[in-house]
Length: 114
Image (cartoon, rainbow, N blue to C red; front, side, top):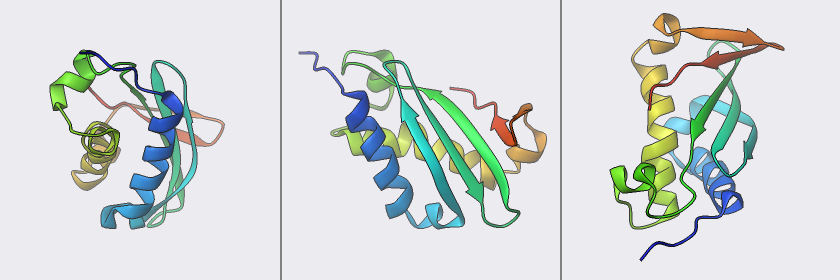
């Protein structure tokens, strides 16, 4: 049975996850916005004071392939593996230095592959 996933619930979970996870202490989230199809996270990396942003697709139902790929038991679990860890992986593996990025209004947008 497919269940609807609220973009506001995802937004709240994203904000909570970035505050709760130990790896999230390396940066400060400036803003999180969501719509029916994507989440946009803007954050400051504390080690270099750069402002980064990432835009990732989000599921709207539990039948969405994005949800099914992870097959989580909760919204928080989906956010952890679908949003948080991809950003951390980009930061930890030096992907920030190697990846394609665009600079827009002082935000360095990461090009994360889903």
